[in-house]
Amino acid sequence: MSLESAIANRNRKQYLTWWILPLVVIGGWFYPLLGYLLPICMIAAMGIALFKGRYWCDWMCPRGASWDLLLSKLSLKKEVPSFFRSTPFRMLWIMILMGVLAFKLPSALASLDPINQVGLVFTMLLTVTTVVGIVLGIPIHHRIWCGFCPVGTMSNWIGKGKYALEIDSNCKECKTCHDVCPMQIRKWEYKPEKEWAAVENWDCLKCGLCIEVCPTMSLKFKEAS
Ligand code: SF4
Ligand code: SF4
Image (cartoon, rainbow, N blue to C red; front, side, top):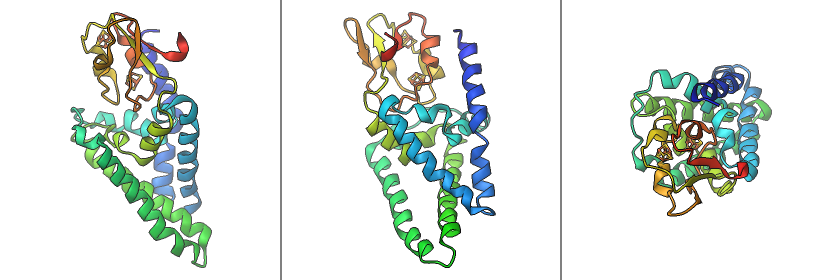
């Protein structure tokens, strides 16, 4: 498959899901039941991570699809500072997520309309984090949120080693694969002296674009061998 076909194929899949993000972020304030799509997505992402790592985040995540299809058109697409993908920063966002749920859910459950109030909590969480992703995504990179998204981080941990991208010793470190990688993973840094080695960066979204663009065919997914 050519790179153009791979991108078109990926975009086609992302068109199936991106609209769910504005549906919940806007519609959830009027129809709070839509907010329940957030925990459903969270559980689905982590369930898929058990078998295929962060595969969900590539096109099944409505927010990830929106970042690629829409936000990328506004983004300056700079290199994401490593701080945004550091473990302490990721942990901070997991604690923020847990803290908001722990603080807001009890009062929502105790209200006169708990089903709608809980839905509103999820809608509020999705809205605030989406605004954070947009505010950082325009001046830096459209997928910057995916580097510290709590669900992405947990999928990273759960999916460690699953459906791993591998690199072989023929890599000539041309860095062509960097240009197409939504997560800016520096694959050549994992190049082995002999044969194949796993690219041990578990933020890989399994999009496969780097495989298509590599001039030495030095990349593949483990299951494809
Ligand atoms: S495009 Fe291929 S050869 Fe170039 S750095 Fe990436 S893996 Fe190595
Ligand atoms: S490393 Fe390759 S497969 Fe993984 S996200 Fe980057 S471009 Fe996609």
